[in-house]
Structure formats: C-alpha cells, structure tokens
Image (spheres, rainbow over the protein chains, first blue to last red):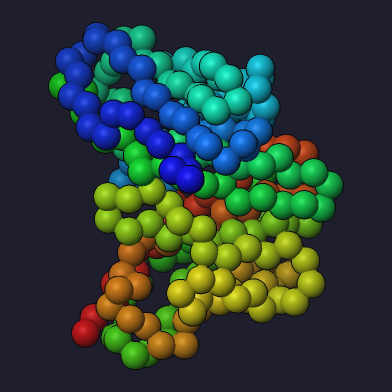
Length: 116
Length: 115
C-alpha cells in the first residue's frame, strides 16, 4: 500500500499562474482533506470531502477549489496564485467515523509551493 | 465549536529525561483526542488516540498520553526521551457528537531532545 500520495513534491509559480495539486489514496477511505501548514499557524483545513460526491469548505478556502474526482482522488486547484499561498500543502484521508467509532487521518508527504 | 491549544511552542529536554508535551481542548460534548508527530520534510504520522475507557493511552515509539476530563487536558508523555524524538508534535480533537467533521489541530509544539 502506498497510502496517501501527492504530486508534485515541489512547485514554484509566478503570481497569477494556476496549478492543480493531486492527491490519491489506496486505503478505500471515504473522507479526504486538504490542509496548509505555515510556520506558527499549525495545520489549517482548506477543504474536505466527507464522501465521494461531496465537498465542504474548511477554515481557509478562499483562493482554492477542489474536485473529488472519484473515491481515490481529491485535487486542489489554485486558479490565480498569490504569494500568500506560499505554503506546504498536505492531503489526508480517513475512514468515516460512525457513532462511537473514531478515526485517525492518514497524511501524504506534502507539496511545498512557492509563489513569487 | 471545537478547539485545541498547545501552550508551548518549544520544549527542550535532555536525552534520558522524561518529556511532557501539553495539550488542552474544548468541545461541547465528549472528545476524541489524537497525537501526531511530524519529522522534518515529512507528513504527519499518527501516534495515539483516546476514545473512551482508560485515561492512560499507550501509543507508538514508547509514547503515552493521559486524558484528564476535569482539566480538559491530554498531555503527551514519554519516560525517557531520545534524540530521535526531536520533531514537531500536534494534538487534535473531534467532538463525539459533531458528526463526520474533520479533526481540529493545535498549532504544534517543537520538541528538541539534547544529547
């Protein structure tokens, strides 16, 4: 099992350019998430998909869009990149927690994005 | 609303000494609590979780955490620190009654174990 994979690992963009970050998981998880990590800010949720066919905004969704392509894949798109979007982006997945069944999230290795 | 606080940005400890990384939480109902570790240039790795039952939870790499409901705390502990434990540690929470919502993470505590 590869777990959660992310591409690319590194990316440099100019202000105004667009790009899509790809994420895939092979654990048959229902839920997937996108976070950004900035120094002193911890992890902040951008968007999540509780199940295939649904997406919801997190804490910091502005400037981003997402697509849950199928159960395995969840992509994050920056339509017009800004320097404030320079960050490390993590994708995660988890099984659905039902009733008293909690779940842990499994994280990918991250994408380090720099916007100049 | 759910929230978690990690009051220390940095914790320094000598190798072989016990370590504690603090976490307090706020939920309206009963909490699910988690600890994750992040090594440099890596994603987060799950360490342990509290669901219900015993207040002392044992996890990976010799770590354990103590749930204290009256103090709304879930501190991470290890009896004898290793240099290899140096990393960034995150506490996370979810309210049992919040349905299928994502975990809420703290801002992280950087642990430095000095040889």
